[in-house]
Image (cartoon, rainbow, N blue to C red; front, side, top):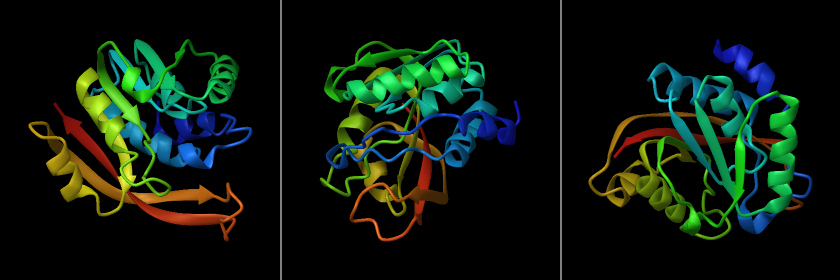
Length: 195
């Protein structure tokens, strides 16, 4: 499937009904999700089992399944977001398992993790448990982080290594009252990490 076709399909994914600022619940835009997932697909990393950590309403999990991942499991602590994720998967006709779990409780093994973890804007270090869980449960990780995170991630992942990374834009829609613009273009980096 071409990246643009995936993006068009993912535009049907509903966002959060009432996002939680403490959980940094920003929906991954379809454009960015399609870009990252297509990157993983072209590397051959979406062929087996895929976990989406902090899956929210299912954007990355659903996209991975649309691109042919065999088994996809999304994990999130927010039951309301998981209800929306299940509706989204049904609407797009894909079989994705969604599990209610704290990031510290994620178990099992995946060939690949895809995730858009909290950036730590509300609470510094919120992305660390996601990286630790991904390193514990998978062989390959695709993750979105604030621009300028390379040195931190390189040190934090220990023996794992960043094989590729690049900068792109995250068109963040106005989600909370403190947002001033309707859409803020946030510079982010997408990482491929090999354990």
